[in-house]
Length: 343
Image (cartoon, rainbow, N blue to C red; front, side, top):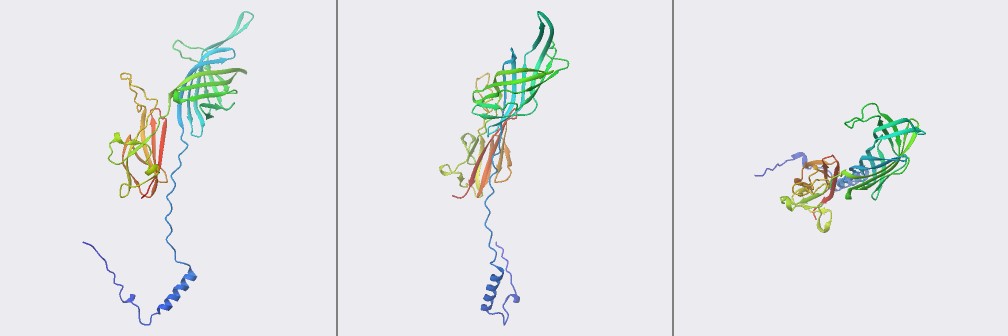
């Protein structure tokens, strides 16, 4: 059954006797257009807003190393631990750098007699502020005097290895070369640094030569898509593309393009099974979160390795975002940008 509504305009809508001639009405209309301008036209449909730019998202690393530290003409064992961020632009920010130096006795003698002995135990230096450097190739360089450190040293170490009592404070600056070899693919890290320590008005040169390994590297985010209902094993990796690899895709639904999503993300820090000698590339991944934008802020789609079906509406540019976090909090992400249109 269909419903129809009829409107009777009544007598008032019918032309009355002696009404204006058609020619007069035409002249009046022309005058109105000349005086008042053309009637407003329908404004064109604005283009879709641009997809938000990919932010300068850093990769987080943690390294630990050991080697030697020269204090003047004395060589001691040393250790270092660093947390730092590497941005896509090559900018590097060290949030935490801790270095430990072996125990040391400074003996003052006159002729053959010992006149004084300075005991330095649990020696440690740490950065005061974040240290900014730049990555070129596999080398991170920090400018001279770009960082300041504070050092602590104790008089004694007990049988448990702890150092009780009050600590001496030492000021340390990098007044010489300070660089780090950054090679996460081969898990190689090397720190070379020349510092100067100041204590009680005396200055002592420090030279670090430490070789390390990566305690943590960020995961790798990788997106995969497939038609709705595709078994997850058959979903292929890569961003959605149209014919001939173009970023314009035809809809497969009345409202747009419907896809199932799969994360192919992995983490090189995942441990192998000690029993079966099998490595689980996803073993260190904690969360996988999906987001979507058509020009504004990213909206939360869901969480997990598999997600779908998800509708991407026709006539819009879409940005599909996958953010992966490992068990230490290090993150990585991938963004797929495409448009859905009738081809």
